[in-house]
Image (cartoon, rainbow, N blue to C red; front, top):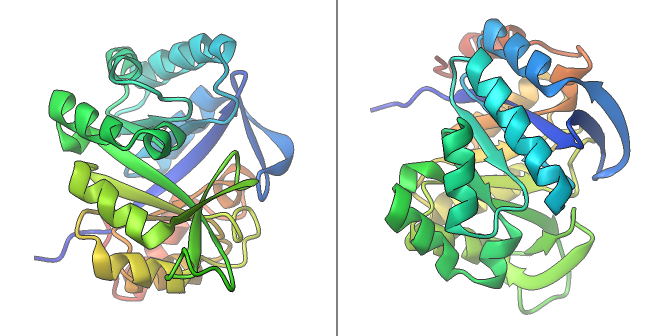
Length: 256
């Protein structure tokens, strides 16, 4: 059975505001997260994702409030990630109105966290975010892609394709695969990386990083993505969710 490809606007939230840069640097203000999420819901987004890009203890309470207010306004699923370190953090976000929660750095440090969350809440609640970059001449990453942390600034030596596969085995319900090389560049998704992960992972795969034109979304879907995620092209009015869906339909890609 063919599953319709989801279109997901992503909002990077810092101290209660949406920000966006290139390769996670030179961030600029993109608006109020609740207002933007409401707009995307109206435009026909299938889901909305929030990523807390500062995730300090002080900003955590701000983010909980943002999640709560957003959940009251929108009718599509809300995924929240950034700074999630424990099952208790997941519990707080779900109680605030999140439908799914993303983990990243904490799962790299302690992979059993994935299983703990999946066992307690169900794997449909858990998204494993994988921030990956291309590497050359590194025998520890046979796929040519390395997992990074700290906005792509810190390498881990972990092969990104192998990590995505392991995360799914441990209980992640979907993989959010973000190309740190392409992030914010609007030059297109890393299709080679998408195909490599698709071959090894059988849970839903969300493509992230690099969307700039409707054709980029089509190409990601054809490379095996179950969902396509973007930020700046939506925030700054380059594209609307409806335009992306229309282009995908015209190309023969089933969308909701």
